Length: 226
Length: 107
Image: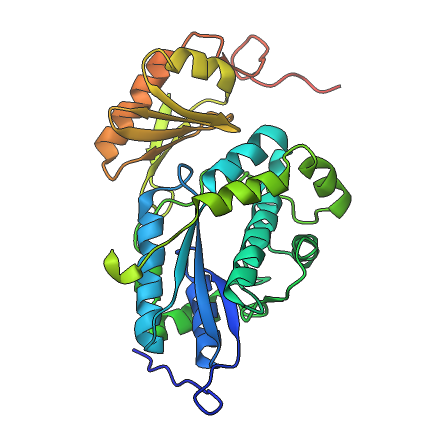
């Protein structure tokens, strides 16, 4: 197992990022790479139930616990109910754009948490060699809803490279435990979304109200307690 | 009506794929299945709970059955087919009569 060497300046952390941790392979690798650079992270898990199962939440918590051990410091972890947001998108918006609405909402919520926590940006495990919806055009449309930077340390890596790191740091075994993938993901997600289409559709769902409801339902969970 | 598959080794569910092509009217499914199961939500996909097994029903007829047991998944898929078979919830694609002529002629 890898030993995390923190490159801190005079023992003081350089910055703080809000790290979106899904329970998959990529996001804990992204978090590790930034922790290794001395960045502090606040973990956020978007809870997709009822479109996933509780195994994903458990996996995400196990991953944060593992990252805490690697970093040798606690990582504050928020769980945000995201299922009601999925229902709003599915009822009101075009199906092939679903992943874009989902990610735009995640970014908006993460930005609010960043404000609360004094974090400078959002950290994600997105990479261009991944699922169909992670294209440069989609990332651009997703970025438009927030004002803080999104740090994507894996953006140019392929899956094999990411898995290699995951194996070295011991997160791969946790990420590949059984868990249900998001069942509301469309069969053919949009790969080149246009901002105009998204904005028109979002007028039907009142993103502001959804964000407030998500933040009201959000809670802090101690990964060691599970 | 269904073939039961494990979509990937890490998933905690089984997928039931229709043996024949058809689509589902989820509003009608909700109406029919609501009499026998608990409806969680109808939002692009229909989520139901039957006998403690959660099932996602998709418009293209696919079912995602949240269970570790293939037997339970098959049993649940069979029950759902039974409930929906012959109802207006199932829309089969139009075909022309005659063996080996399942698709409409071109032009």
